[in-house]
Image 1: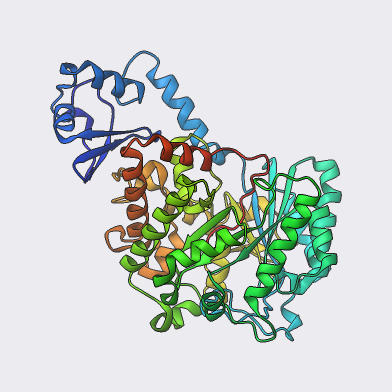
Image 2: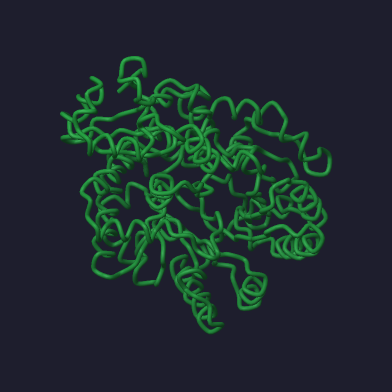
Length: 494
């Protein structure tokens, strides 16, 4: 639906967006406030008859849908809070330690290299150069995220980054955090001790029960599932032994959905619960790298994933209502934007997106990219999203480069057809590189855009829960968006 023009309404009504949802109409505004109105109530709003219903007038005023005393100041303060990420510069720094990996996952997007190809490792010297570049960032917070390949295959470079960053931070005094995204198969007790001692947050991949996981994630020399299960348990044992709160200190995991996964939504969730995991991130396949080549074997229609997600999400809610705590991370990210004014530090749900201005990806060879998706495009032969090279270009110059400027324009929703008038604009965002990869256009064609369709379906499903006004469900959702002491932007998509 198109947004209603202010001049077509009562003079006190602000600019609104709306979406027909079941028997009513969801109304939103630029600061994320929302109301679910009956069709009759919405008709009265559109026709300027809201004054006939004092309760409705009060709801509209309290949620900034009506102009009044202090309106501009209040709206400005909320808008400033919701867009505070624009003031600080990139805080997520993705470091690709190696392209080598001991897995051959069906959906691998990283253009992996065999374990023998050490020329695809980041050297210790280059790792230190990357850290120097990272500390040029103006953000008071720095999250260094180790990816690969399998980052544990280049352990010396990982240690070098952690130790050198900690040394530099004695003077810089930033809020410094580390995240390791690993399949855990190369973990050992010494590595575990180092990671815990240096407060490195750990994220892994778990696609469900053993048979399903190992059908998706193939490891030639050992059981991928057994290694993942073992080291999740060991980390949790160590956290518990040290007296850490397991609601805050725990291993997170990502679940990638293939065609093989679709019938097993319940078994996937049950596996996470059985392993004591606190969160699950239900993700669709992405179009980058090997997955694009193997789509006919492991892919599915967008609606098939939407149906899978809804069933799995409903089961997660059911478990929570029964006392088993498990967070579905994608929903929690959207709910943070819906129920609070905080930014969940999720780069793809920002306007503009986080490419360059919120995150930077550093390849093993020192080349820098706007984001990890931009780096993956380079692995596929398209270097359009390269910003420069660590050690040769300073960070400010790279952040002012044409790729960053282009992606900022392409991901600012106010200038995008369909997005600018969508009811879910305050909670959503676009990924121009996804659009470029799937539709050949950075701006994207949203009516046929798979990512847009998924966002609409996810938000529809969440608002159906919210509109039921079930207090028990609302308590669960509010718990999901609560600020944790150790909240790090890890385990993001793709």
